[in-house]
Image 1 (cartoon, one colour):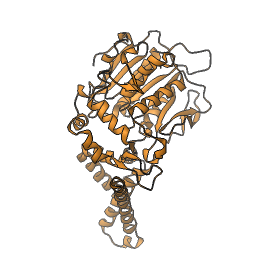
Image 2 (image 1 turned 180 degrees about the horizontal axis):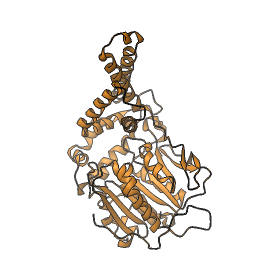
Image 3 (image 1 turned 90 degrees about the horizontal axis):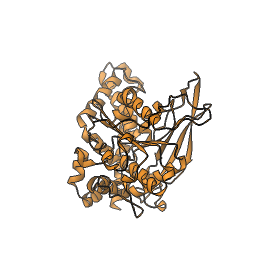
Image 4 (image 1 turned 135 degrees about the horizontal axis):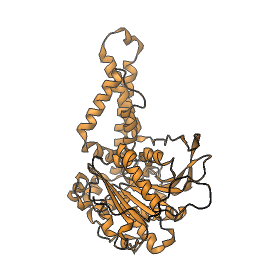
Length: 433
């Protein structure tokens, strides 16, 4: 009951701050105050507008907002989002470009389950749609999943990925972003042993903690400092009566958000202060850079307690993936069993979450894979967000990933597809980081 009361208290505090912002905006915008030439009312209205929007976004799942793209034919093609596989804790969805033939490049984006929705990869999806058939994992908010659906930990997550890859077939290229990189690597190895014909053609790992000890960060240091008992006592709560998942033990998204914000508190504080100033001076807009970023950044979801705790214990503390000791459903996964899936790692030189060295460690685990099928890239000036959604992704990393996909694809089948150029060599060479 204590855990449930704490969960509801956090929601009450969030709701109160949203109400305070709405009240300040309404009161200071009262028409009679326009007769009083006092800028304090403008500043109060600006504070209220920014505060209300900030706390309102914390409980709303963002929309994908990808309505159409322009095709090679110069026409605008509408986008419909279709559910390919529906599961209790996450779905596999497809961005269907209406009126366009199926593309050569079939890409599965594995979105992180680290406190944000899959829509965090919206710009990644949008950048790939003109050239690829895009699928993505759409993880559900744990607070909305009834307790009767059972548990969901890192092993269940891995088996979900295995099922999604099997559903899409071997003519597939997988891109895992951040947190799911080690589990996607394990899922690929699991298929290599259990169902070799279902393996994807290539696997791109972007900024993931394959070996957290390779380059310590604040995230890894935190995992080393605290015990599992401390984490369970301080971070785990039970969903309150307001949601379908009432009673389920979760790591609340609001707590995760507080952790994210505290890592760069000065930068976030400055950003919100500047936004209040812009609103007061009439220089802000509904979709200005601040709102575009924070509408997504502040939208958080709960993770199941067992997934959060098993991630910390098995991926960060015990380093089971880095030691090649990961067990899934009683089966010890051997990453060395991957012998024909081309693997590329991407890291950001200024990544303060998964520092350079953590992701490229995957290549050393691939003892059965020839060097001709291994590749790596270090983007010197990119931070964590930039390597999959920022300018570095658009201008530098995305073209390299598409080249890597093409280099590890078979010739197109005899049907209408995109007119991308296919490379004859089997894979890019191993690059030094």
